[in-house]
Image (cartoon, rainbow, N blue to C red; front, side, top):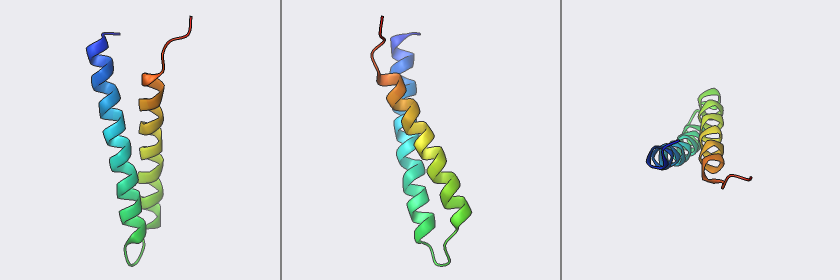
Length: 61
């Protein structure tokens, strides 16, 4: 994979992950709480963060 593309996708994953987690917290803090939307946003955020961390790992040979 092109290193520049990999860096771009990694940064996108980290930003999307943080945005998903922040959205989850904000939706859970609403009155009344939007529990389903908060859970879905949280899961999407965690998946994107995991993808970002997976892309930053150095390859093992």
